[in-house]
Image (cartoon, rainbow, N blue to C red; front, top):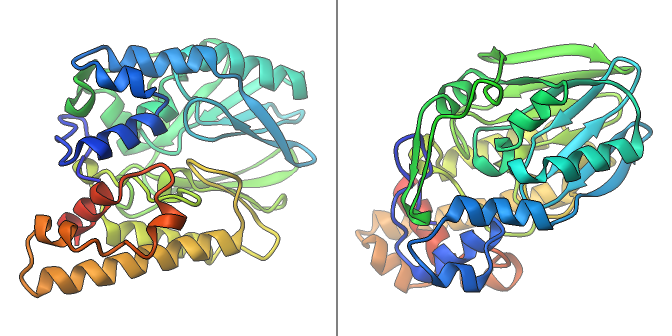
Length: 318
């Protein structure tokens, strides 16, 4: 992609098709995309209103939740419910309904995998429902400041106090909860500089947030520290945690496994190496895009993202 989402700016995309692809991933219809400027945040939140949350059981007390925003997960038990990510604010009733359908346990904690709107916008509503919000230090920092998202002609004010994480950590956090050891670990800057993974060690369930877009080109947020190299390194670090039976939850896309994550890393590495060679030879970003270095991969990976956008962001972050 050619956009970087950060607390100051969401840089202009280089291609209209790319903007449309990202907008679709965030729940915007083609008709809505055609009208600009418009209320992009409103459109995203409208998707949260209209999209039900589907639950898939992964373990005796762990479910994958999928709705309008990023993929979520729930761990239930007598120690209280852990929720990972919160989608859009308008999805909160659907999230609460999905949780109530699988458990009557008390709320405990909401963990944010990173700071992007499709993963944290429901924080305030879930906090009001009884969840304390936990995230990396930099997630709190970025949510505490206004964000201008030029791609969507949208300014996001600083989040209210109830949405901002109250418990943060710089590197890692681990505790026993509901019969499992739950580990939260911060990556070096990768998709953003706020990314963490959550590993339910006994259940063998790993939530990677937007480090992993299963079966599609990813959005790498160069404006908040993201890069292709950092994303590859984080995905490789995650792969080392996975066994053949590990259930891997991506930030976007279907539930994955070790083979899916390995295929994703191979794709990222192939694209990195092709574009790095072209850049080293002196080709400009637009010249590299014109050469279509991902052409042989597009049929498998250009499902919800523009190849041109992806090529551009890889070029700039090598």
